[in-house]
Each structure stands twice: as C-alpha cells, then as structure tokens.
Amino acid sequence: MPQNVEIKASYNGDLEDIKAVARNLAGKEPLELSQIDTFFQCSTGRLKLREIKGGEKPSQLIAYERPDEVAAKYSDYSFYHPMDAGSLKHVLTRSLGIIGEVRKSRLVYLVDQTRIHVDQVEGLGNFVELEKYIAAKDAQKLKEVLPSWCDWEKENPQALKLCLGEFLHLYGDYQREKLQGNPQFHALFEALERLKIKEYIVRELDCEVQIGMMLPVPRLTELAEISQNASHFAEQESVVWIKCISVGDELEVQSVMPSPLVLAALGESVVEFSRPRTVLEYFRTFVPQMQKKVEILVASKLKAFEVLSELGSTFPDHVTRVTREISQGTLSISLKFQSCNSSLTFDIAIPNEFPLRKPTIVKHVKDTEPRERKVEYEYNPGMSGEEIGREICYSIARILEELD
Image 1 (spheres, rainbow, N blue to C red):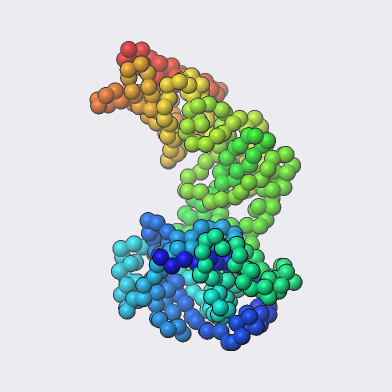
Image 2: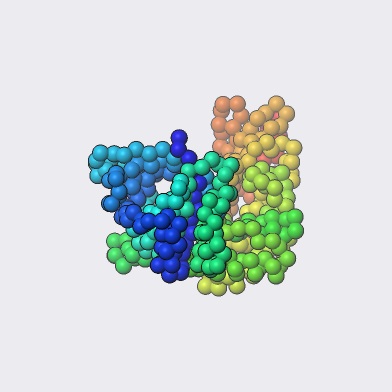
C-alpha cells in the first residue's frame, strides 16, 4: 500500500508570494488542476472520488487512513482510476451515501519527490500543502527536504497556520451558509443547530470534570475565540485547559462524585469536582442567552449523577459493569450485578429533569427468565439526588432479599 506524509496549512498572505517561493523551488511552472472531491460514508478510514480536469487521469477513487492532527500526518492509501467516474459516483452514492463535497483549484509544483500544492478551495480560502512519499519514521523530517521553504516560513510566521488534514472538516460552515437561504434546507439547519454540541474538558489539580453544552455550530473564525475564552476561564479557576472537541448528539452536563459505579460508567478516571457553582457561573458567562436552560440542565444532571454515586457507594463490591445512555430526557443505567450465586442485570430509568415522574422501573434478569417490577418511591420536590439514589438502592436490596 502506498504511503506518504503531508503537512497542510491555511494561507492568509499574498498568493503570488507563495507561488513565487514554490516556483523557485521547483524550477518550472506548475501543473494547473481543477478538482472535485466527493467523500463517502465508510466503515474504516476515508473514501473519496476525485474528479480532475487538467491531469493525466480524469478521476481517482482513493481509500486512505490518516490522523486528524495539527502536525505532519502519515497516510496509508490505495487508489483506482475508474473509466466512468459518473457511474461509479452514482453507485457509491446509492450504496454508501455522501458525506460532503469539496471543490478546489490546485497548482502542483514538483521538487524531487516532494509535491507542493497551492490550493484555492471554494468557500474556505487558500491553502498550502507539502506532500512527500517517505517512511513514517521520517515524517518529522519533511521540512528538512525544503530548506528554502523553511527560511521563507520563518520570515512569514503569520502567513501559514497548520490545520487538520481534511478540507471537508472545514467545509460544513461554508456549505451551511450557502444553503441557509434555501427554504427547503432551513428547517434542517435549525434542527442541526439545536443538536450540535461542544464538550469542554478541564482539569482541576488532579480532578477532572466533563462539561457538555449545546451551542450553534461555530463559524471557523469563532473557534479561536471559544478556545481563548475557555483557556481564560481555566486560568482564573486554577485549572489546566485541555481541549475543545465535538461530541455526539446528546446534551450532557456532568459533574460526578467518586464511586466505582461512576468510574465504570464513564470508563475513565474521574474524581470529585467540588464546585458545581463555578461550573454554573461559567455557563452563565459564556452563554448568557441560555442562562435559564443551562441552569436547569446543570441542576438535573448533578442530581442524576448523585443517584449514580449513591448506587456505586452502596454496592461497591457487587457492580461488575455499568453502561449509561441518555435519550429523550431519560438517563438509563444498566448494572451487571454479582451477588452470591446470582448474576443479575438491573435496568434503571431516571428522568433527567426532576421531578418528571415518580416511579422508577427496575428490571432484573436471573438466569434466562427476565421479570419486570415497577417500583414507586415517596417523592417530594425537595428530594436530592442522593435521597432518590437511596430509594432506588432500597428497591434493589428488597429484590435481592427475595431472591436469596
């Protein structure tokens, strides 16, 4: 399988300057190409069909694997030159589905085994890419092949900004703006805006808390400001800013207590975050227009995880596996429970926003005979998550007594 290493950077300087540098390195004029890349759904790696005007081959089907990181990227790929790109595109669209499409004009400069690409991408701007077919161990030496390029980059530190390896990742914002005016897309985009989530992870000394918040899809120009605001908040609170990433389509605000149950549920090391008010104040400052909604969500999530904490501390030696899922306003917990000679599974549904309903459904499975029980507990609006957790623990304990 062919392998290469590439560095990609956005370019905000004079395009003629970067062309001159590349031309001097190559010693000749570039090859001019027009490309349309169509990305398809696939189970592993990435798959794209490239339609080319100006090249030796009119199209390429490329399957490849490459990390998304702001650095030199090592890539494994396979490619095929189809005879009929239109028919192949139709078949792949029907069978796999399209993720997105990127259109660009590309100038290709050849310097020995290195290709310099100067790209003008529709809706995104100008980019420069260095690509070389070398071994993975030599990935960090890519720039050493082009000392003149490095000298130019040092003299123009603000012109180039390294970016993730796929134009498609940057393209969603532009496509949304382009289609927003079309009435048939308007409702769809409104739904996507409501579902998009950013997850912020901060570390307080040795303590970690995950905070998720619902935000409109940020414009590319806003990403730097978002990171700067989060970093500033972290500095004020004596925490270390880690990262800002996109997650799923479920809204989660998590502040958890240390318990075996919670640790298993999250699948990672999480310890106490003792200042939920600080988290809430941050949400209020960062997203003032969502203050009330965020306050309700934070409160309900804190209660839900207090329930988890109580379960974990009550049965610390019996819970062997925990999974959790948040769907349609309900936190679902599945417990794999080992007690004496019995192996049980408890499925517990807890409403996110308290109070929504009084009963909690507890289903347990013994051997191969599933049975369901509806357990109601005394509820009042002042009950904490810890108190609700205790009521659920009592219900589980009663079931265990009946089975013994």
